[in-house]
Image (cartoon, rainbow over the protein chains, first blue to last red):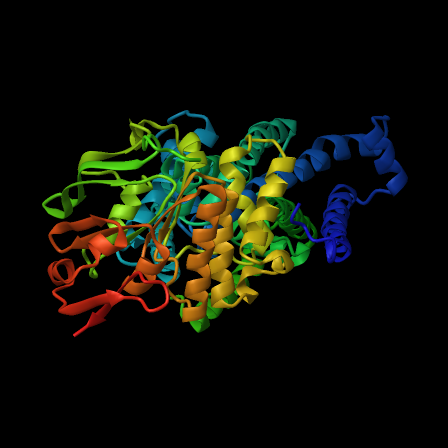
Length: 336
Length: 263
């Protein structure tokens, strides 16, 4: 009821731009690759007709693109959710040590030959790391100040990465190679199993999040007012945080710790679409997360012919300048 | 909403508030009459706001209880309590970029189902709340563009859209200039007369409180000093005990309510 009629035309144009960009990246992801193929062949392959393109498209490119879209959406949503929940544009799980923590946990299970489901392992490691960072950075008087959170997160992240690198030395060659790729984030060799692995939990978590959008909009008013409006603020916050952790863990489990996607997706999505209300802003974050991840993966495999660059490298190239800009903004505002 | 038997009074029984080892209020018992405008007064640090927060179930008492309709607040399901009692904190946070209508609409939360959209009742409540604070024309404006007085009125509209019987307000007139203070206090009086709304607010200005309230609660550093009608509460003796202030009390030349003149 509150969406003003004026500005709606402008808003829908901006949403169209985001949707079109996502569509273009998806189509490019399926059509571009090491083996150049005519579009007609690819279309045949997609429709299930036999031909030279069938194998490449159906078993290599389509699952890879779908995994990228799902993982990107989950990572983007997770970041935007935590940024809202903690009222801090830098409080995204990737900056809070979640990803390096997840990586370290994966390394520990690999190094000691423990077999556990990867999503569970990465979630546990990530949560432990993020909790440690939050506790270390928290001050009674000022809560989670943006700069302290980032510095503690980076420091903790480096420690986790160093430990993970040390553990990697103990691994035999092939396993170490796989681990290396996992640590920097990669979407190489994703199959339909990975598509299911991201989209099934992803869709369930997104549904859970939809049910909590109203609670989030009340928490946005501060705990006192949220409680006055009938919300059990503490419980609602716990559920939202659990959903955010689940989204992050799902994304990291299939794509690895793709740096900066959670940090950037929310603010970029809001900038592109102009979305201010929570529901649309989260949708924009999911679409933008998918766009960045799929786009970065596209560049990662097409930039240097014959060489698949790590996905995390590409998102890092995009994310590091963003982080610096954001930090300078916070310093100017005196928020640090 | 007349309530002669006081069944919907907010009642405080043996209430102790504070932190372990440092009680802000100890063993306080009083009754906030329903259908009236009550002001809680007292010096800084006497626990006025703490008391209000306990009345609004934002803090858990260390001892005693707050009861509504004879039932402990803690026994209420949060959403059901939120339909009867709303509290507006002192310095609420406005989410970035939120519009007036969006903010006020959130006051409908206790009345809406998890997935249900906006009902006619919701729309009407929001429209009524905006009209009550004269912000109808500002509905689509971002809160950040409003003046201090308008912003405060937008928050009050949120609390009104909640359509509770009881409204608790923590210093609703701070940050407002005198004309706006009076406007806000008159609004509460009007809502009380027209809709039977019970208003309980923490106020600083003794004379304004006397003018615009039916019932006063005066706290001192050691707890309750007096409660009752303004004439009975604002006496030189009580003021000396609560504030350590030497003052003369005379009838307000305009309203004949007690007027405090410090010596």
